[in-house]
Amino acid sequence: MTDTTAPNGTPGATPEGAEAGQAGIRILAQFVRDFSFENPLAPDSLRAGATQPAIDMGVEMNARGRPDGLFEVDLKLSARALREEQAVFHVEVVYGGLFHIEGVSQEDLEPVLLIECPRFLFPYARRLISDVTAEGGFPPFLIDPIDFAGVYAARKAQAENGGVVGNA
Image (cartoon, rainbow, N blue to C red; front, side):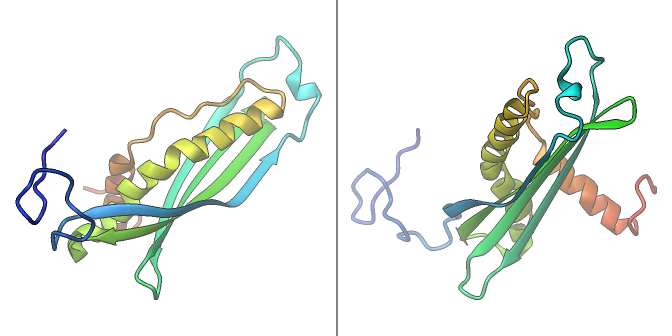
């Protein structure tokens, strides 16, 4: 825990907005923007002894500024399970947040929006996927933690290489 000094020189928490330039991220709202679960082969897909399905994961992050100075950030997680080339289940959630961000330079704003904000949203989107797969008759599908900085860096490199992955 760090100690801070109030403007009058006494130790304690710094009041909101007391220090100009201090970086801060506040989550003003969280919400499900879109949610879909498909279980096309149920109940046959739930039979005991079936081979484990292959699971394909997708992760996307999007952010946009608003006229009121706030930012909307969306985290899209999708998972498709296939067994013998047939869809076992498909789940997709777009989980959003409304953020107030202050004290962040313009050059650092994009990484904050596409790395730090999705980190706040991830546990909630993960829980939704876990819950719906369990309600669909499967074991809860728990997504491993995501390295949002790595995803951001890979997408940035891909964009710089003209959309082609692996260019030197």
